[in-house]
Amino acid sequence: MSTKFVYARPRMEFDPQLADDVASFDRLNARPVGAAVTMAPARRSPFNGYSRSLTPDGGILITYKDLNRSILCRSLRVAACVALSCVSLPPILDLETFSWAQVASIGALALANWIVLKLKIRKGHAVEVRPDCMIIDGTDIFLADDIGDENWPTLQHDPDDEGHQFIGGICGTRFIEYMTVNPLDESDRTPQVLEADLTLAFEQLWGRRAAGFGLPL
Image (cartoon, rainbow, N blue to C red; front, top):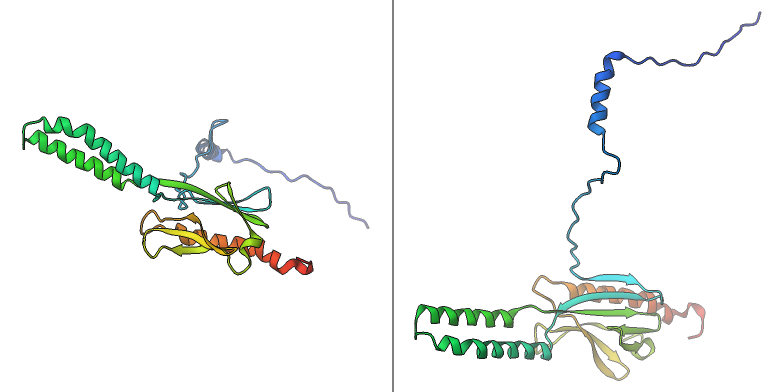
């Protein structure tokens, strides 16, 4: 004796008592069409002008900013202070001697000169390491063959000037200061980060040249 089975579609009934709850849920999650999604506030980058990227020529480009301590910058500071004093002193000397106005004016002039001398001026730099050379600030080119495998540039400290740091090394028969990397303050570690990234770039690009992968150099 055979048994006949009849397939019936599953049925789902909606409970009317839940209607208000569903409507409330929809209202809470409703958002106008085209409304912008609220994003988390953008965080401040800890790299402070420092970046590293790949170039179309197969190189690694590093850009950074350091404290401008060049002779030209220092000379301009002194010239600005002299010009400011020459313009401000005659009117100050015309005031009543030792009056509050004269004392305050001299104090303001001294403060302005101090700000000019202590203002931190940053300078941008760029170094690109390619498989066959290193390019500084887009102009100075140093060939990897001239630098050699034993003289990769490293972080150097000027023994006569504690605040002066630079990337230097031997190129050919000369010791060269390739670029400055003066820290902005005691907490600035741009010199150390730059040295580590440069060493990694040399290992990746110039180290492969030395290995040669079995090919004649």
